[in-house]
Image (tube, rainbow, N blue to C red; front, side, top):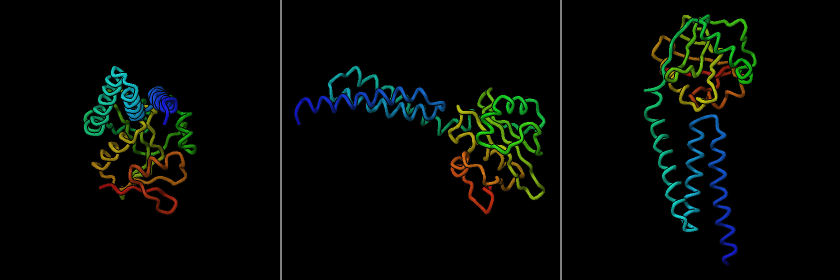
Length: 208
């Protein structure tokens, strides 16, 4: 392989790494940002090794290590130390404010949800430190089944960690099963990731 071809290949690697780093900053989810940024930094570090630009190698290696550290902390610490869930009334002013603020996006994921006349007898606000990250609204029956009408989090926290935390908290209550009507295509991947399974016309999650 001649020098010209090698130079083209090296440049492609370099541009690919740079593109991934730039794309990472377009992510609304911090988790996705760090994952893509880590890959881009690693590719850029390889490019630096290939063309012998060691300051580039040092910088991108450091960025990759920093991202990996925060990703590790995300999976080991975040759900336990940062998130909190607060049971509230469905008529709570914070619930009303949150739904009004994100109503258009809520209807993208839950088109049948009635944001004007909120029904149900159970609601949880999920906080990340002092910020409301999401809300869950549903109706709990006497047999411990919680029929969920809304399970929504904002873009920043849409990385499954909020949901996993929330359902662990719900499992500490008298709820033994959560249930969704299955006609929610935009939330299907999320529900499967959390552990829901399709049962007839419903998505159901058995809580342990």
